[in-house]
Image (cartoon, rainbow, N blue to C red; front, side, top):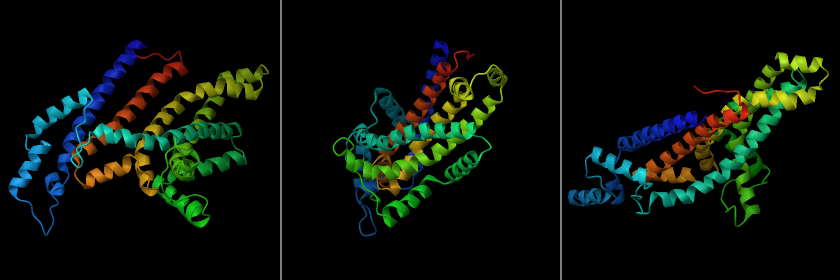
Length: 318
C-alpha cells in the first residue's frame, strides 16, 4: 500500500509539472501585449517603443521565453507564483481571497450531490422496475443532460425572477452573515450539484443492481437474511468502489462547472478573477488560477485512488 501511495505521489508531481509547463506556454499564445494594455494603448493613443520596452522589462517579458520558464518553474517549487501585472500584488494573495469564495459553492455542492446521489441510487436499485425507479431514472437523465449554465439560468428565471424567492445574483460572506450568504448561495449550489447528483445516482443504481445479482446475495436471502440487511450491510459497501471514482471525478469537475456558475450568478470567485486576467493579459494570474485548479483536481484524484484500499482491503496494487 505504501509503495502504491508513493508511486501515485510521484505521478501526481509529474502531472503538476506537465500542467505547469503547458499553462506557462499557453499564455504566450494569447493575442495582445500586456505592456500595451497596461499603458492604455488605443486608437487615440499609442505608447512609444521605449515605453513598451520599459514595461516589458519591468514585467520580465524582455527575457527569452526559456529563461522566463525556468524562473517561473523555480518560483512554483518555492511556492511563489509571481505578482499580478495589473496591481503588482502577489498571485497567491489574490488566489487566497478568491478560492475560499469558490469553495463556499463547491464544498456544499459536493456534499449534497454525494449524499443525495447515493441515497437516490440506492432507492432506485432497491425498488428497481417500479414507478419510483422509472421516475428517478428519468429525472436523473434530464439532470445529467442539462449543462450547468443552462440549469443556472433556468433557476434564475423560476426562483429569482418569477417567484422572487431569492436574489438572482450577489455575494455575502459566509462567516459574517450566514443567512444572507445562504440566500445568495442556494441557487448556485443547487445548479452546481444537479448534474453530479444525477451522475452519482445513475452509477450507484447500476452498481447496486449488479451486486444484487451476485451469488452471495442469493445465498444470504436463502438463509433467511432480511433484504434490507443484505442491501445496507453487504451490497452497498461492495457497490461503493466505482461510485467513489465517479464522486472524485464529479468533485474535480465542479471546479470547472463553478467557473460557469459564478458567471451566471455574479459570484466573485476564481471565475471573475480568471476572466479579468484573460481580458487584461495578466499572465501570472492566468497561470496561477489554472495551476491551482489543476492541482486540486489532481489531489482529488489521488485521494480517490488511495481511498479504494479502505473500501476494499482485498484490493492489491501491482
